[in-house]
Length: 319
Image (cartoon, rainbow, N blue to C red; front, side, top):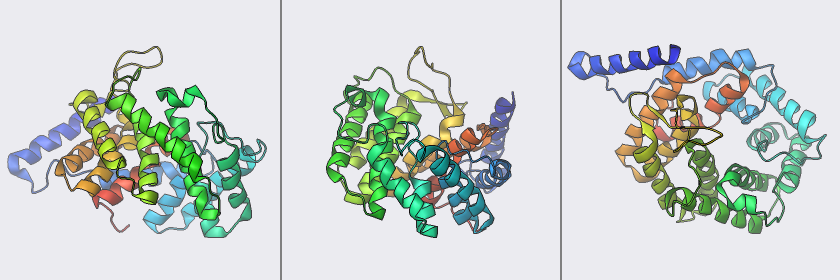
């Protein structure tokens, strides 16, 4: 009921605006609510040490966005819990869904702590599926998250001297194959927008490193297909899955919007096509107003990547 009330309220606001009672436009995004939620919920979880979806990255981004160093302590809590409490005891063999290099790199760049450098290189080398494995699981879309996370882990570890570009290129080929299965050949068993977005994040990082010309058209194809086939107007969210599956159905999930929206922000930045800004604004607004933030995992999920949408859209504001 809370989500329905907030979405109906947003629709009524747009109706009022469209009647000319304000100079604002319905495409305006609730950046102030995004920032307020970030600070209010962020303080609640500062001492949790939860690093699912990379809590250290989230808190360093908050510190950079707000200009307030108080958030650095929260990031360091997450670094210590993840690096010292999880990675080191497991000899850096992170599970495929627990590969989070960004916060570690941010910590190393800010502090020079050799333990974070060691963790970056160790994870890039020893995490699940990080080595030269011809595993059919990685070819299938079920392994897309593991492929994406390993691409990011290896590319970000290059900043501290690691180099395994041959393996990265193999993984990038697998990630592009996942986009083909989802959006071109349509041979995938199912499509989930947030999984496609995690792959997009890794491919965008690859593009930033290499300017690979295959990335932009591939991500455009995926974003266009998801908008045309999975966007649920009125609820303003993507379906969780494009079909009914034993592990998740077609219910719209605004809670995942902020994981998906940066893809549309990047396409707007790269192409200048206003349709990606307009689509992104709808995705962002519903994600902010309808997102679930009542535990650290979901908080990190919503703020892992949404800072980049704010940047690529040009929404960055002074605190």
